[in-house]
Figure (tube, rainbow, N blue to C red):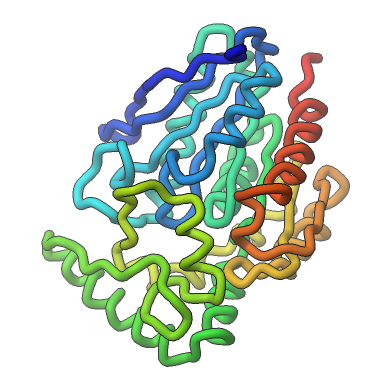
Length: 300
């Protein structure tokens, strides 16, 4: 029996339309969970099983695509801007609070990988967020950059920075961005070429997914450090660290959890970055997320 309905919705973020799937449970509990993907990911790339589990347990769910990606508007395409994505999160929160039957005081955020850092940043900056869950979160861009050096060499980082510099200049001149592959096999050129990146994305991305992003992110990644927001986190937080993570170092996530204090619940899994999206590892992760959200978003 169908436990919920999925509908297409949209909201505006700084004048550009973001499109989302709205999951409406048959027996809503009044709370809502907002979701978006990680680096270059779209709503149709392995996130629906998580959304369905939440909706089947009474949560209204908004799963959206960032501007410039997927079903959302925004030119140029594949422009990956940290500041714009954080704006999109704030717009999604405002939209979700306006939904009928949603308690504006019981909004939870769900992020993964790159968006794991986004939800922590958003929660730290918005004291009205009730809870946030971050799986395999990228909480320290500097640590992630050094991890890339470990598996691909300093030359890879330098090449990405060179592409990024040219892309940034093209952006200033109003020209189309230079893009680089998001994922590739080990030894090949991409933002991510760890041993499991290509197969990991391949396991969750749909036909037609665009394996590219604007190169200029390389200039800003190392300075994006949600870990510095740790002491500003006041709501309940779930951190799920993958101890074999080759993309978002688990040590940084563990460090954030310890700095943030008693409101943070830390779960560690002996798996890689992409394992958490599929099979039994996903089932275990979503069970922990569901337990967390049921407690953190319970009615007063």
